[in-house]
Amino acid sequence: MQQIQIGKRTSSMARPKEERALVLIVDDDARIREALHELMLSAGMQPACFASTRELLDAEVLDQPGCLILDVRMPGTSGLDLQHQLATGGNPKPIIFLTGHGDIPMTVQAMKSGAVDFLIKPARDQTLLDAVSTAIERDLAQRACARVTERTLELLETLTPREREVFQEVARGRVNKQIAYDLGISVVTVKLHRGKVMRKMQAASIGELFRAWESIPAEMRTTSAA
Image 1 (cartoon, rainbow, N blue to C red):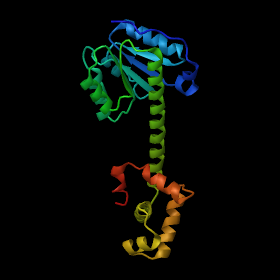
Image 2 (image 1 turned 90 degrees about the vertical axis):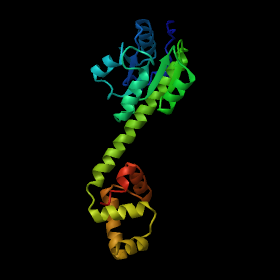
Image 3 (image 1 turned 180 degrees about the vertical axis):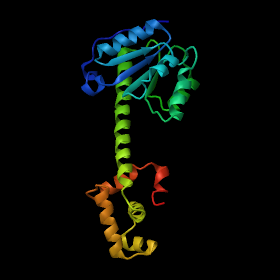
C-alpha cells in the first residue's frame, strides 16, 4: 500500500477553532496512520490514530469536536459498519473515507449515508485537507445547532399547555382571531398568551419566534401542545 505524501503546512487550515478539534484517523496500515498524523500536524490540527474501529470505540473520543478519517476495509468492524453504527446511535460525526479498495456502489452507499467525501489512496494532500476542513466546519455547525435546540427545549418547558398551543398556532401562521376561534378563547386572551410566549421563549420578534419553533425537532412539534 502506498504512503500518502506529506504536504507543507497550509496556513488557511490552521484556524484556532480547527486546532481545538480532534481528527480521528482509523486505518490498519501503520504507514498510512503515520503519514496522515504528520499531514494533520503540518496543517496545525490535532490528530489521534487508531489501528481499528475497536480501538477507536474503546478510546471514547467520538463525542469530542472534530471528524473521522476512516479506512473502509479493516479487520473486525468495517468503516461502513462504523458509519452505520454511529448514525443509528445518533452520533452525526462527519466522516471522510480514505481507501485503496473503493468502488462505485461502495462510494454511493457511503455518500448517501452522509460521508463528507470518499477518497482513493494515495490522495492529494490538499484534497484531503480540504475535506477535513469541510468536515470540521460541518461538525461545528451541527454542534451549534444542537446547542440552540437544547436551549429552545429548555425554554419550551417553561410554557403552560395553553401557551404551547398558542405558540404552535402562531408558528403555523395563524392570526389572533383564528387562534381565538380554534381554541375557544377571546382575542384578548390570545394576545396575553402570545406575549407570555414571546417573553418566555426570549423572542424579540415574530421572526425569532418562528426560528425557535423551527429548531424544535419535528417529532416534538406535533406533541408540544400535549
